[in-house]
Length: 164
Figure 1 (cartoon, rainbow, N blue to C red):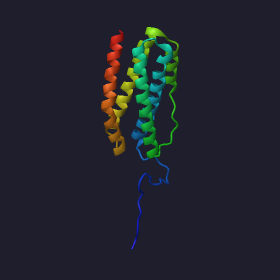
Figure 2 (cartoon, rainbow, N blue to C red):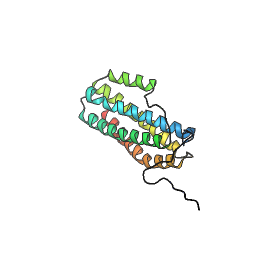
Figure 3 (cartoon, rainbow, N blue to C red):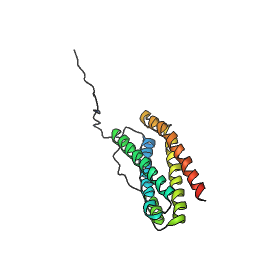
């Protein structure tokens, strides 16, 4: 007689080979999604000091909260799939953030919202591509998040159009 015990509760199986449980496309999705989310968090924090428009400030605070939750979920997915890459903001995004920090008022509002829209479009593209991944967890996560990402893009575009 042979007894086999599986993982129960909140336990995860050991991954003794230390290899990620996602393919290269899944790895790129998790890393790029996290990086774009971190960039969006940084951008959405700028209106507190650079904008005088309460609508822009309140909207940016919502974007900040949404992306903070999204990045936390992506980081959890990375951990669950044994992805051990460092999370940081790219040099290109750092330069864009630096450019935004030097702007104020209406000019800042328009530029900031455009960068938020650009980031949102990047996230949507990443998540759309992830719906075709070989890892079912990546596919399910992307499919669950896409409707919210698309809805947020529409509200970003609406606010941007109102500022013109």
